[in-house]
Length: 416
Image 1 (cartoon, helix red, strand yellow):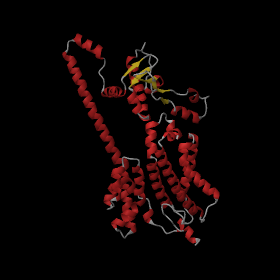
Image 2: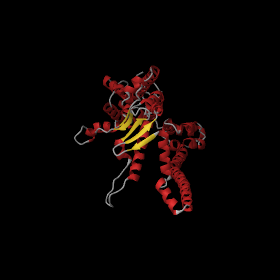
Image 3: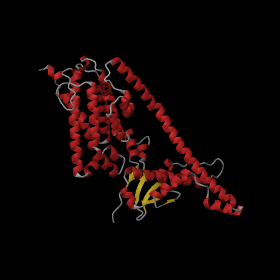
Image 4: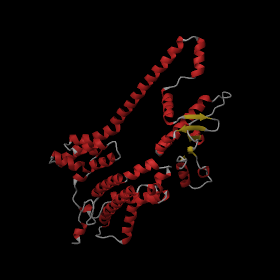
């Protein structure tokens, strides 16, 4: 009976027996997938209701404001994830120590590892960093250290990680008559795509061996090694070349389009008398490039109007557009406004002499760029850095990080 407690047990949820590195990693990938799915409501809610970057690193305020149903779904899902994680780590530690039970201190450490998930909601950023560091160290130990029990079991080549299946996914699956990897066609554009790649890598040898029915193990391993090399080359060399080539082609096409537009403007101006050409130049200024036109289009989409003064860049937005935007959209608005202001200042700057030069960029313009409501002139967005935290005398490195995260500040519209 005592020996049964140390037998291999790769079930998804169980506290009996031990689990090896292969089973532990496979279960861990599934647990991460489940964790991603059960936290989707929270992720979606925080992406649309976060008011600062700090909300993403300590989501207690946003979580409390969530509807009760979303809170319940998220908490129940995370409790389930914690239970699965504890059972997985418990069996793995029994394998490492070769014992059929663990002491209370070890169980406390396991519980802290699993409950560290909740630190994201309830604890400050420094606690999250400590939990992340602790969990990473423990996870690496559990994953790479050989167990006293499973290391004595016979070698099983079907549990080797298949890099061809990881990099080739559905193409590798078609070649090896395994059709489960075809699901990657639906998942590759989502965060779940990476988890599914891991599943393909972990199960690749098993799927290929069962479907190709190869009796020669050495020949089978040689074939999979060759396929892995081919798909690694495709993934890291050929695919990047094709992607870069496609991007270059798009840029060249846009350049030709821009050149065609510029040539039309030039040809039209040549037909006019010299005096008229001078008037047109003074009124229109320099012809805009394609990127200038694109930036102007973005400004017209986001903002109703803007004013560039000596001390401030004022951009005005419609209240409805501001309320419907999430944190990322608001940050993009402020960045576009600062970039536009820098370009305007660069064009309007008149040097006093050949040695006079002033540099304008998004970074230099962010501190004096403000977003206002076009209806009430209420300040809605700004970039306000805590200089004391960023200075050498002010606070620790952690405070500097916090100051950088809190620099983007957005405010809700005041209701009349």
